[in-house]
Length: 331
Ligand SMILES: Nc1ncnc2c1ncn2[C@@H]1O[C@H](COP(=O)(O)OP(=O)(O)OP(=O)(O)O)[C@@H](O)[C@H]1O
Image (cartoon, rainbow, N blue to C red):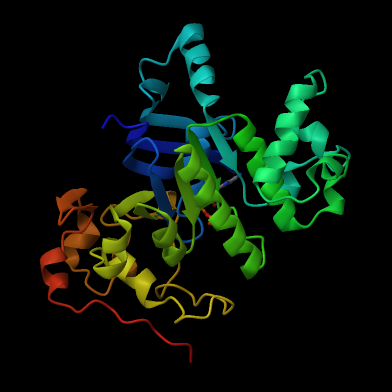
Protein backbone atom coordinates (compact mmCIF):
# COMPACT_ATOMS: atom_id res chain seq x y z
CA UNK A 1 0.00 0.00 0.00
CA UNK A 2 1.20 3.52 -0.76
CA UNK A 3 2.48 5.12 2.46
CA UNK A 4 0.55 8.04 3.91
CA UNK A 5 3.63 9.44 5.63
CA UNK A 6 7.16 8.80 4.51
CA UNK A 7 10.39 9.95 6.12
CA UNK A 8 13.23 9.32 3.73
CA UNK A 9 16.73 9.61 5.26
CA UNK A 10 15.73 12.60 7.35
CA UNK A 11 18.34 14.48 9.37
CA UNK A 12 17.49 17.62 11.32
CA UNK A 13 19.70 20.23 12.95
CA UNK A 14 18.41 22.96 15.23
CA UNK A 15 20.26 25.93 16.68
CA UNK A 16 21.27 25.22 20.29
CA UNK A 17 23.21 28.00 22.05
CA UNK A 18 23.76 29.58 18.65
CA UNK A 19 25.27 26.51 16.96
CA UNK A 20 23.51 24.08 14.62
CA UNK A 21 23.18 20.75 16.44
CA UNK A 22 22.03 17.48 14.94
CA UNK A 23 18.89 16.19 16.71
CA UNK A 24 17.70 13.63 14.14
CA UNK A 25 20.10 11.44 12.21
CA UNK A 26 19.15 9.67 9.00
CA UNK A 27 15.66 8.48 9.99
CA UNK A 28 13.62 6.56 7.39
CA UNK A 29 10.07 5.49 8.29
CA UNK A 30 6.85 4.73 6.42
CA UNK A 31 3.34 4.86 7.80
CA UNK A 32 0.40 3.29 5.98
CA UNK A 33 -3.07 4.93 5.95
CA UNK A 34 -4.87 4.02 9.18
CA UNK A 35 -1.76 2.51 10.76
CA UNK A 36 -0.66 3.27 14.34
CA UNK A 37 3.09 3.60 14.83
CA UNK A 38 4.62 3.94 18.29
CA UNK A 39 7.83 5.96 18.54
CA UNK A 40 9.73 5.05 21.69
CA UNK A 41 12.98 6.26 23.22
CA UNK A 42 14.48 7.95 26.24
CA UNK A 43 14.42 11.67 26.90
CA UNK A 44 16.32 13.69 24.31
CA UNK A 45 16.33 10.93 21.70
CA UNK A 46 14.54 13.15 19.17
CA UNK A 47 10.96 11.85 19.36
CA UNK A 48 9.36 15.29 19.65
CA UNK A 49 11.64 16.73 16.99
CA UNK A 50 10.52 13.99 14.59
CA UNK A 51 6.86 14.99 15.08
CA UNK A 52 7.73 18.69 14.90
CA UNK A 53 9.57 18.12 11.63
CA UNK A 54 6.43 16.58 10.10
CA UNK A 55 4.28 19.44 11.44
CA UNK A 56 6.70 22.18 10.36
CA UNK A 57 7.11 23.30 13.97
CA UNK A 58 10.90 23.34 14.18
CA UNK A 59 12.64 26.33 15.77
CA UNK A 60 13.67 29.05 13.32
CA UNK A 61 17.13 28.48 11.90
CA UNK A 62 16.64 24.69 11.76
CA UNK A 63 17.70 22.71 8.70
CA UNK A 64 16.24 19.49 7.33
CA UNK A 65 18.01 17.07 4.98
CA UNK A 66 16.29 14.16 3.23
CA UNK A 67 12.61 14.16 2.34
CA UNK A 68 9.32 14.06 4.25
CA UNK A 69 6.25 13.17 2.18
CA UNK A 70 2.61 13.14 3.18
CA UNK A 71 0.22 11.47 0.77
CA UNK A 72 2.72 12.05 -2.04
CA UNK A 73 3.25 15.76 -1.28
CA UNK A 74 6.72 16.76 -0.14
CA UNK A 75 6.70 18.59 3.17
CA UNK A 76 10.47 18.87 2.88
CA UNK A 77 12.68 17.92 -0.01
CA UNK A 78 13.85 19.05 -3.42
CA UNK A 79 10.32 19.32 -4.91
CA UNK A 80 9.11 21.52 -2.12
CA UNK A 81 10.58 24.81 -3.27
CA UNK A 82 9.15 28.25 -3.93
CA UNK A 83 5.69 29.64 -3.31
CA UNK A 84 3.79 26.83 -5.05
CA UNK A 85 5.71 24.25 -3.03
CA UNK A 86 4.97 26.05 0.24
CA UNK A 87 1.28 26.32 -0.50
CA UNK A 88 1.09 22.59 -1.38
CA UNK A 89 2.85 21.84 1.91
CA UNK A 90 0.45 24.02 3.90
CA UNK A 91 -2.55 22.34 2.25
CA UNK A 92 -1.18 18.86 2.97
CA UNK A 93 -0.49 19.73 6.63
CA UNK A 94 -4.16 20.59 7.15
CA UNK A 95 -4.75 16.84 7.12
CA UNK A 96 -2.35 16.33 10.04
CA UNK A 97 -3.31 17.05 13.66
CA UNK A 98 -1.05 17.11 16.68
CA UNK A 99 -1.81 16.40 20.33
CA UNK A 100 0.84 17.74 22.72
CA UNK A 101 1.99 16.57 26.13
CA UNK A 102 0.60 19.41 28.21
CA UNK A 103 -2.79 20.56 26.98
CA UNK A 104 -2.97 23.42 29.48
CA UNK A 105 0.19 25.00 28.07
CA UNK A 106 -1.42 25.06 24.60
CA UNK A 107 -4.63 26.77 25.66
CA UNK A 108 -5.14 30.47 26.30
CA UNK A 109 -6.37 30.77 29.93
CA UNK A 110 -8.53 33.77 28.94
CA UNK A 111 -10.31 31.97 26.12
CA UNK A 112 -13.46 29.92 26.63
CA UNK A 113 -13.29 26.30 25.44
CA UNK A 114 -16.00 27.02 22.84
CA UNK A 115 -14.01 29.93 21.38
CA UNK A 116 -10.91 27.76 21.24
CA UNK A 117 -12.80 25.05 19.35
CA UNK A 118 -14.79 27.30 17.02
CA UNK A 119 -13.49 30.44 15.40
CA UNK A 120 -15.83 33.32 16.29
CA UNK A 121 -16.96 34.04 12.73
CA UNK A 122 -18.12 30.45 12.12
CA UNK A 123 -21.84 29.80 12.46
CA UNK A 124 -24.12 27.61 14.54
CA UNK A 125 -23.27 24.46 12.58
CA UNK A 126 -19.63 24.75 13.65
CA UNK A 127 -20.68 25.16 17.30
CA UNK A 128 -22.98 22.17 17.01
CA UNK A 129 -20.11 20.09 15.57
CA UNK A 130 -17.88 21.21 18.47
CA UNK A 131 -20.48 20.19 21.07
CA UNK A 132 -20.95 16.82 19.35
CA UNK A 133 -17.20 16.27 19.22
CA UNK A 134 -16.76 17.15 22.92
CA UNK A 135 -19.48 14.63 23.62
CA UNK A 136 -17.70 12.10 21.45
CA UNK A 137 -14.43 12.48 23.37
CA UNK A 138 -16.29 11.82 26.61
CA UNK A 139 -16.95 15.30 27.99
CA UNK A 140 -20.30 15.38 29.80
CA UNK A 141 -22.59 18.34 29.54
CA UNK A 142 -20.65 19.55 26.52
CA UNK A 143 -22.81 22.63 25.79
CA UNK A 144 -22.08 24.01 29.27
CA UNK A 145 -18.39 23.10 29.01
CA UNK A 146 -18.11 25.21 25.84
CA UNK A 147 -18.65 28.29 28.04
CA UNK A 148 -15.98 27.33 30.58
CA UNK A 149 -12.35 28.43 30.83
CA UNK A 150 -9.37 26.04 30.99
CA UNK A 151 -8.87 26.55 34.76
CA UNK A 152 -12.33 25.07 35.33
CA UNK A 153 -11.25 21.74 33.84
CA UNK A 154 -8.88 18.96 34.91
CA UNK A 155 -5.78 18.04 32.91
CA UNK A 156 -7.49 14.94 31.55
CA UNK A 157 -10.49 16.93 30.37
CA UNK A 158 -8.26 19.50 28.70
CA UNK A 159 -6.46 16.73 26.86
CA UNK A 160 -9.88 15.54 25.65
CA UNK A 161 -10.58 19.10 24.50
CA UNK A 162 -7.29 19.08 22.55
CA UNK A 163 -8.21 15.78 20.97
CA UNK A 164 -11.64 17.19 20.07
CA UNK A 165 -10.01 20.21 18.43
CA UNK A 166 -7.81 17.90 16.35
CA UNK A 167 -10.80 15.73 15.36
CA UNK A 168 -12.83 18.75 14.25
CA UNK A 169 -10.30 19.26 11.45
CA UNK A 170 -10.93 15.65 10.28
CA UNK A 171 -7.24 14.72 10.05
CA UNK A 172 -5.92 11.69 8.21
CA UNK A 173 -2.93 11.53 10.53
CA UNK A 174 -2.66 12.37 14.24
CA UNK A 175 0.72 12.93 15.85
CA UNK A 176 0.37 12.39 19.60
CA UNK A 177 3.48 13.55 21.47
CA UNK A 178 3.44 11.98 24.95
CA UNK A 179 -0.25 12.89 25.23
CA UNK A 180 -0.64 11.27 28.64
CA UNK A 181 2.64 11.97 30.42
CA UNK A 182 1.19 14.90 32.40
CA UNK A 183 -1.82 12.86 33.58
CA UNK A 184 -2.37 10.46 36.48
CA UNK A 185 -2.35 6.74 35.70
CA UNK A 186 -6.12 6.21 35.45
CA UNK A 187 -6.65 9.26 33.27
CA UNK A 188 -3.66 8.20 31.15
CA UNK A 189 -5.30 4.88 30.39
CA UNK A 190 -8.61 6.58 29.53
CA UNK A 191 -7.01 9.09 27.18
CA UNK A 192 -4.97 6.43 25.39
CA UNK A 193 -8.04 4.20 24.97
CA UNK A 194 -9.95 7.18 23.64
CA UNK A 195 -7.30 7.96 21.03
CA UNK A 196 -7.21 4.31 20.05
CA UNK A 197 -10.99 4.08 19.73
CA UNK A 198 -11.32 7.29 17.74
CA UNK A 199 -8.62 6.43 15.27
CA UNK A 200 -10.09 2.98 14.67
CA UNK A 201 -13.55 4.45 14.11
CA UNK A 202 -12.27 7.10 11.69
CA UNK A 203 -9.48 5.08 10.05
CA UNK A 204 -6.98 7.78 11.03
CA UNK A 205 -3.28 7.00 11.06
CA UNK A 206 -1.50 7.67 14.37
CA UNK A 207 2.06 8.34 15.42
CA UNK A 208 2.14 7.77 19.17
CA UNK A 209 5.25 9.13 20.87
CA UNK A 210 6.03 7.79 24.32
CA UNK A 211 8.75 6.72 26.77
CA UNK A 212 6.64 3.67 27.49
CA UNK A 213 7.42 0.70 25.28
CA UNK A 214 4.62 -1.45 26.73
CA UNK A 215 2.04 1.25 26.14
CA UNK A 216 3.21 1.75 22.56
CA UNK A 217 3.14 -1.99 21.92
CA UNK A 218 -0.39 -2.31 23.31
CA UNK A 219 -1.92 0.40 21.15
CA UNK A 220 0.20 0.44 18.03
CA UNK A 221 0.58 -1.84 15.03
CA UNK A 222 4.31 -1.24 14.80
CA UNK A 223 6.86 0.32 17.11
CA UNK A 224 9.95 2.31 16.16
CA UNK A 225 12.73 2.54 18.76
CA UNK A 226 14.89 5.62 18.48
CA UNK A 227 18.16 6.38 20.24
CA UNK A 228 20.32 9.50 19.85
CA UNK A 229 18.11 10.74 17.01
CA UNK A 230 18.69 7.54 15.09
CA UNK A 231 16.21 4.77 14.32
CA UNK A 232 17.50 1.54 15.92
CA UNK A 233 14.69 -0.94 15.34
CA UNK A 234 11.21 -0.92 13.87
CA UNK A 235 8.99 -3.94 13.98
CA UNK A 236 5.47 -5.23 14.37
CA UNK A 237 4.56 -4.36 17.99
CA UNK A 238 3.90 -7.82 19.35
CA UNK A 239 7.11 -9.23 17.87
CA UNK A 240 9.17 -6.34 19.15
CA UNK A 241 8.04 -7.06 22.69
CA UNK A 242 8.28 -10.84 22.39
CA UNK A 243 11.56 -11.06 20.49
CA UNK A 244 13.43 -7.75 20.54
CA UNK A 245 16.52 -7.69 18.35
CA UNK A 246 18.45 -4.51 19.11
CA UNK A 247 20.35 -4.45 22.43
CA UNK A 248 18.75 -1.08 23.21
CA UNK A 249 15.25 -2.48 22.73
CA UNK A 250 16.24 -5.42 24.92
CA UNK A 251 17.53 -3.03 27.56
CA UNK A 252 14.32 -1.00 27.50
CA UNK A 253 12.31 -4.17 27.96
CA UNK A 254 14.55 -5.54 30.71
CA UNK A 255 14.40 -2.42 32.83
CA UNK A 256 10.66 -1.83 32.86
CA UNK A 257 8.85 -2.43 36.15
CA UNK A 258 7.02 -5.72 36.51
CA UNK A 259 3.30 -4.99 36.49
CA UNK A 260 2.20 -2.07 38.59
CA UNK A 261 1.82 0.96 36.33
CA UNK A 262 1.74 3.29 39.37
CA UNK A 263 5.33 2.41 40.16
CA UNK A 264 7.75 4.96 38.69
CA UNK A 265 9.78 3.65 35.80
CA UNK A 266 13.27 2.41 36.62
CA UNK A 267 16.10 4.23 34.92
CA UNK A 268 16.23 2.36 31.63
CA UNK A 269 19.54 0.83 30.57
CA UNK A 270 22.59 1.82 32.63
CA UNK A 271 24.30 5.05 31.54
CA UNK A 272 22.99 8.32 30.22
CA UNK A 273 21.00 8.67 27.00
CA UNK A 274 22.65 10.76 24.28
CA UNK A 275 21.28 13.34 21.92
CA UNK A 276 22.17 12.92 18.24
CA UNK A 277 24.77 15.69 18.38
CA UNK A 278 26.58 13.95 21.26
CA UNK A 279 26.69 10.58 19.55
CA UNK A 280 30.15 9.30 18.60
CA UNK A 281 30.92 8.22 15.00
CA UNK A 282 30.23 4.50 15.40
CA UNK A 283 27.04 2.93 16.75
CA UNK A 284 25.30 5.59 18.85
CA UNK A 285 24.44 3.02 21.52
CA UNK A 286 27.89 1.37 21.74
CA UNK A 287 28.98 3.15 24.94
CA UNK A 288 26.03 1.60 26.84
CA UNK A 289 25.90 -1.74 25.08
CA UNK A 290 27.04 -4.92 26.80
CA UNK A 291 27.65 -6.55 23.40
CA UNK A 292 29.78 -3.77 21.86
CA UNK A 293 33.19 -4.60 20.38
CA UNK A 294 35.79 -2.28 18.78
CA UNK A 295 34.03 -2.39 15.43
CA UNK A 296 30.85 -0.93 17.00
CA UNK A 297 32.72 2.12 18.25
CA UNK A 298 34.15 2.77 14.78
CA UNK A 299 31.44 2.03 12.23
CA UNK A 300 27.82 3.13 12.31
CA UNK A 301 25.71 0.09 11.42
CA UNK A 302 23.26 0.31 8.53
CA UNK A 303 19.53 -0.27 9.04
CA UNK A 304 19.12 -3.86 7.88
CA UNK A 305 16.03 -6.01 7.25
CA UNK A 306 15.94 -9.01 9.58
CA UNK A 307 13.13 -11.29 10.77
CA UNK A 308 10.48 -8.80 9.63
CA UNK A 309 12.25 -5.97 11.45
CA UNK A 310 14.53 -3.18 10.36
CA UNK A 311 17.38 -3.10 12.82
CA UNK A 312 20.64 -1.16 13.16
CA UNK A 313 23.14 -3.48 14.82
CA UNK A 314 26.17 -5.36 13.51
CA UNK A 315 26.31 -7.75 16.47
CA UNK A 316 23.00 -9.50 16.02
CA UNK A 317 24.51 -12.91 15.37
CA UNK A 318 26.36 -12.77 18.72
CA UNK A 319 23.33 -11.38 20.52
CA UNK A 320 20.97 -14.00 19.19
CA UNK A 321 22.86 -16.50 21.32
CA UNK A 322 21.80 -14.50 24.44
CA UNK A 323 18.35 -15.10 25.96
CA UNK A 324 15.56 -12.49 25.78
CA UNK A 325 15.66 -10.59 29.09
CA UNK A 326 13.06 -11.27 31.73
CA UNK A 327 11.21 -8.45 33.43
CA UNK A 328 13.24 -7.03 36.31
CA UNK A 329 11.31 -6.70 39.55
CA UNK A 330 11.79 -3.64 41.70
CA UNK A 331 14.32 -4.03 44.48
N1 LIG B 1 13.91 24.23 22.18
C1 LIG B 1 15.06 23.56 22.24
N2 LIG B 1 16.22 24.21 22.41
C2 LIG B 1 17.37 23.54 22.48
N3 LIG B 1 17.47 22.21 22.35
C3 LIG B 1 16.37 21.51 22.21
C4 LIG B 1 15.08 22.13 22.14
N4 LIG B 1 14.16 21.17 21.97
C5 LIG B 1 14.84 20.01 21.93
N5 LIG B 1 16.15 20.21 22.06
C6 LIG B 1 17.18 19.18 22.01
O1 LIG B 1 16.92 18.35 20.89
C7 LIG B 1 17.20 16.99 21.16
C8 LIG B 1 15.98 16.15 20.84
O2 LIG B 1 14.92 16.54 21.70
P1 LIG B 1 13.45 15.96 21.64
O3 LIG B 1 12.59 16.93 22.41
O4 LIG B 1 13.06 15.66 20.26
O5 LIG B 1 13.60 14.63 22.47
P2 LIG B 1 12.48 13.65 23.00
O6 LIG B 1 12.93 12.29 22.61
O7 LIG B 1 11.14 14.09 22.55
O8 LIG B 1 12.64 13.84 24.57
P3 LIG B 1 11.53 13.97 25.71
O9 LIG B 1 11.04 12.59 25.93
O10 LIG B 1 12.32 14.51 26.86
O11 LIG B 1 10.48 14.92 25.21
C9 LIG B 1 17.62 16.95 22.62
O12 LIG B 1 19.03 16.96 22.64
C10 LIG B 1 17.11 18.24 23.20
O13 LIG B 1 17.95 18.67 24.25
